[in-house]
Image 1 (cartoon, one colour):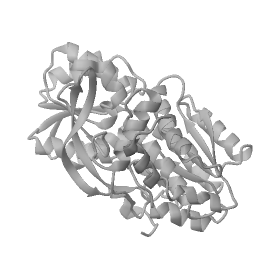
Image 2 (cartoon, rainbow, N blue to C red):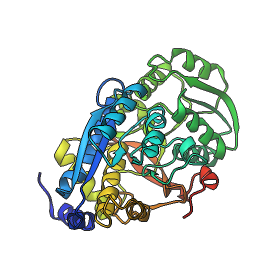
Image 3 (cartoon, one colour):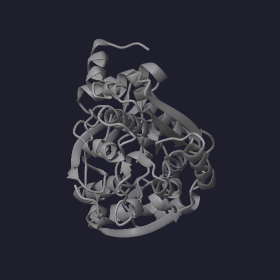
Length: 384
């Protein structure tokens, strides 16, 4: 792996605390469960690659990672998690992209005395009354990007939005979040099938609805299918979405149909800090592609774990938990801190899809929410 001076300096800063893990006698064993085959595999591959970039750069013999495929199936995810806990003897589980899988795995892992640290999925059920001292979400809380989209729709003067998302926990959180900070009326509200690829019926409803704008959450291949079909429909309503619908991998497949669309995210490749610059550079050098949000969140998750391992032995669960909560690492997002429910309090940006040479990507155009905390934290019994 090649490193420029910028990358080397930033990574030295990023991994300074992680190197201390060698001072502890106990090793940390991590079970990374993510989607590597079938629908949604691109998101899991990005998660794995971002996580392993941080692990490999740290070169810490005290940290071991076991990687398994969940095939985007809850029953498979549960079987893999049980194997990792019972046979592989992992200390920490992480990596799940999809909220229905996380709900099947995370509470059971916590009940068996294991930490679950989420790289992505962060359903409402685990953020409020269902919060757990051994559950952390490094990414966001599911509602957050959609709340930001609702705030942006309001700020943009839209008053009659049509909204749609897949019918699974993250999709439900999506529309709930959008409506929380959107002040207009709804021209329509639809839940689609998870994994759906034909949106002719939904587009027909949008056309007939009288809407002045569209908000949709359709991650992975679902978003690619919808955007292409929407572009071909001739409807010219403005579109707003969360970052998941306009992430780096999706944009290349959608092409010009995505240009100019606004979307919301807590991360982008142009966030100006040394850790993020080094991450984007080294990820591209290592994997020959730009990183996605999923890769960035996984990179942060690995660095959080490495930092905690540098401060406490995993055998001392209270000390290790406190080290995780302290979040003493350099995030690609810049400032990073957990709220009382162990979900991030963070800024959320509006991005615009642009083209740089032959590459479709995003640029930050504004900050729509500052130091934003999810509403469910008030119902969580954990203290700051």
